Image (cartoon, rainbow, N blue to C red; front, side, top):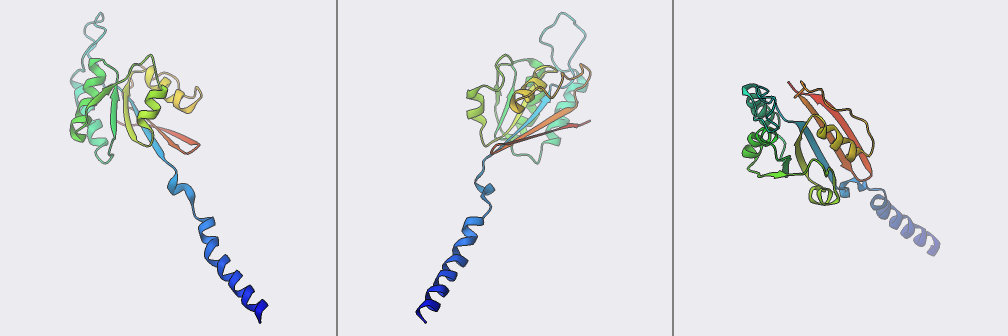
Length: 173
């Protein structure tokens, strides 16, 4: 009888401890999501202006981006310090009650940026060359080429969950 009692106790212990060993540990994994866009359409009337503002179509697109992002709760919004990128980020930042933070396009995905954005959902507004370069740095390989100069509709989504990094590209018109 004693052996039967011991076996029963052992089975009871195993029954109640196995589920805790097999529980999904992904609930404890921190997820970082980056959404990268290029600035909206810029004013091209003065070819010598290195810091143009958005044109009317660009202003509409910037508002369209804020509508597109309406169901995403951003923790931060980053932009380069150029009129066109700041103006693209502004409607989304205003709706989300966030300040647009400036990043240096010469220092993409620095350790400081990684730490500041870890576990957060972040919008990053850049340029035809810096946006895919930034995405590539997060991915750790050169997957994406520069964006065509007439394309202001690309959205790159990069998700980091534990050791897994995924990305997708959408065209949002």
